[in-house]
Length: 364
Image (cartoon, rainbow, N blue to C red; front, side, top):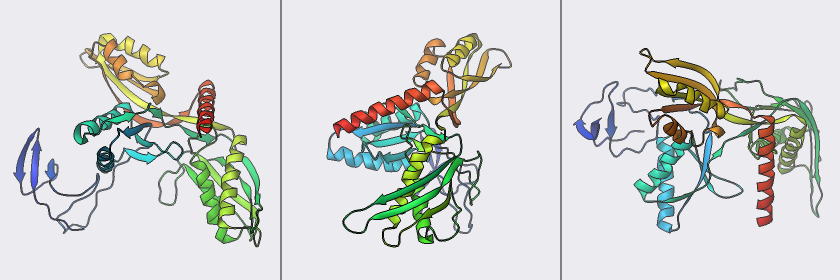
């Protein structure tokens, strides 16, 4: 795609200097160009593209709603479209059940910045829900399924039977493109008990069921589904019947496969004057952090504490750190991986989910 660049400027603080050439390592800005983060620009003679940077999965979500007014609705949509173009770690989707707009990102501060930008840059004050951690569900052992979906109505009915098993997917498993995957469907059907045209419907049905698990309604990962056999009917079988059968089979068998809840774990690095080192370590331990290292600067004036800590325990940490270090402490945080929650935390999450689900059903 060819485009004309009307103006090039070199950026330095809040000053701009017009230039006609950008060299390697220069920080510059282009005006009047429609683009997104990680797009590559060349002079037209070079047919190369820079490889995209690694974009981690989002770990925290926030429900946002613009305050009343048609104008604010239009500005709200325009702002979100611009934000996701410039920041690949920001995700936006609409919740299927509550119909709320959910923004997801890499932490509490990350999302707070965008809510503030909506207000300042676009004049759209928002009603903000309680931040929620992006939990995941998984399984711990192998389990077999043998599920029959049969529905008879006045006309042609629905008939589909699927047989197979699910098992945990080994960590680091890669797909056809060499990328690490968290879900895999394997077709081991021999013969024509399930006609070949319905195999893809089964795959879609299993994938549908992974989008919302049965424990807390979170996405399911670390799962391999193997389809071995089944049964069809010459009249009543259809794409819909096999898709429904596959989704129902997976939802029912997961209960027998040792289901578990995973939570995002963050790698955190706290820097503060050395006299606060003990207070910082104690504070991280209270938040169920696992200390990885604790060291001093070369001159002994400052300390650096590194730890792995559940994201759910990080709410309000910036305020606590400022108060216990007299405003001298700071921290950085990045996503590490998802790990199993403790048994009591899992029971609490399931209980809260069932309670919320029951309240929503009463309202409906």
